Length: 366
Ligand SMILES: NC(=O)c1ccc[n+]([C@@H]2O[C@H](COP(=O)([O-])OP(=O)(O)OC[C@H]3O[C@@H](n4cnc5c(N)ncnc54)[C@H](O)[C@@H]3O)[C@@H](O)[C@H]2O)c1
Ligand SMILES: O=C(O)C(=O)C[C@@H](O)[C@H](O)[C@H](O)COP(=O)(O)O
Ligand SMILES: [Zn+2]
Image (cartoon, rainbow, N blue to C red; front, side, top):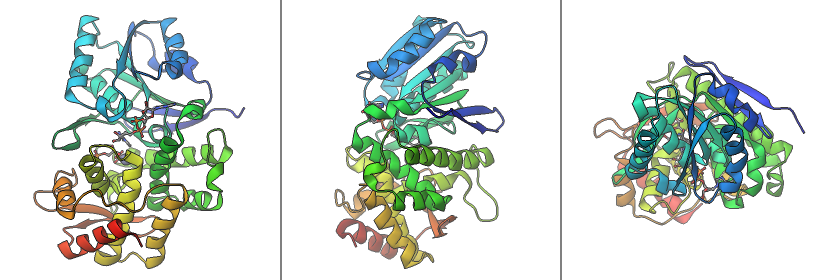
C-alpha cells in the first residue's frame, strides 16, 4: 500500500492534512501533550467506521462518545447545545479536545462545537466521505444552519490536524462519492485544469474507492483548498482581482439556495454541480466566459453522474434564498464567476434578465 501523503497547511497555526490508509494511530501525536478528555463526535449509524478511531483514543484518554443525527440534521443549534451540555457534564477544560469522524455535516458541527466550547478547544477531523476529505475538513470553516438558510452561524476554527483515511471510502454509497466529485470538479474549474483532464479521460466507473486516480484527485483538490485558505483564511479578499477565499464558493450561491429550497433533499455536492452550471451560464451572459467552457461545465459534471438540470424551485424562491448568501453586501448580490478556467473574479449585481436566462437553462437543460 502506498505511503501516506502529508500536505502541510502553512498558516498562522500550521497543521497537516494526511492522506493514506489506517491513520488512527497518529491521533495522539496530533492531539499533543496535556489532553485528558476527548469528545468523539460521529453520526449514529457509523459505529463500524468509528471503531478504529475509538480504539486508538480509549487507550490514552477519557473518551466521551457522542452519536449525532445523520447528515444535515446534525447542523443545528439544538444539536450543538446538546454537545455543549455533554462537555460541561464531563468537565471538559481548555486542554481537552474534540475529534470528529464522519462527513462534512459532522466536521462542520463538530468544528463549531470545538470553536465555541470555552471559546475554542483543539479539534482533529477524521473525514469519512470524499467531500469531507477534499473540502469540509480542511480550512477551518465550521457552521450550522438556521431557519433562514445554510451555514448562517459559524466561525473560523482551524483543526490541529486532518486524517483522510481513504479506506473509509470503501463503504461510502456511490451517490455520496459522486457528490464529493462535485467539489473536486469545482476545484478543477477554479484552479487546477489537470483535475478536469483526469476526470474527462478516466472512465467514470474507474473513479472508485481504492483507485490511484481517485487518490490523485483527492490530493489535488486538497492542495487547491490549502493554497486558497493559506492566502486568505478569513475570507477577507484576494488581490489583483482574485476573489480570495470566496473562490471556493464557486457555484455555492445557487447551490446553497437549491439545498435549502429542496429541504436539504439535494446533496451538497449535487447542489454545487447545479450551482456551477448555473453560474457558468450567468457568466456567459453577464461576463465573458466562452461557450466552450460553459459546455464543459455541463459535460464534466454530467460525466461523473452529477445533475446539471433541476426544476425543484421557482426563480423567485431561489432569488429569495440567495439573498442570505454571505457574499452579498446589503442588497447587492455577488457571485464568483470565471472569465476562463482558473481565472475567477466576483460579479456584482447581475441583471434579473441574465439571472433568469441562466435559471431557464438550469430548468430545461441545454
Ligand atoms: N466547512 C467547509 O469548508 C465545508 C466544505 C464543503 C462542504 N461542507 C458541508 O459538508 C456537508 C456535506 O458533507 P458530506 O457530503 O460529507 O455529507 P454528510 O456529512 O451528510 O455525509 C453523507 C452521508 O454519508 C454517510 N457516511 C459518512 N461516511 C461514510 C462512510 N465512510 N461509509 C458510509 N457512509 C458514510 C453519512 O452518515 C451521511 O449519511 C454540507 O453540510 C456542507 O455544507 C462544509
Ligand atoms: O472553504 C470555503 O471557503 C468554501 O466556501 C468551501 C465550500 O465548498 C463549502 O461548502 C463551505 O461550507 C461554504 O461556506 P459558506 O461560507 O458559503 O457557508
Ligand atoms: Zn461546498
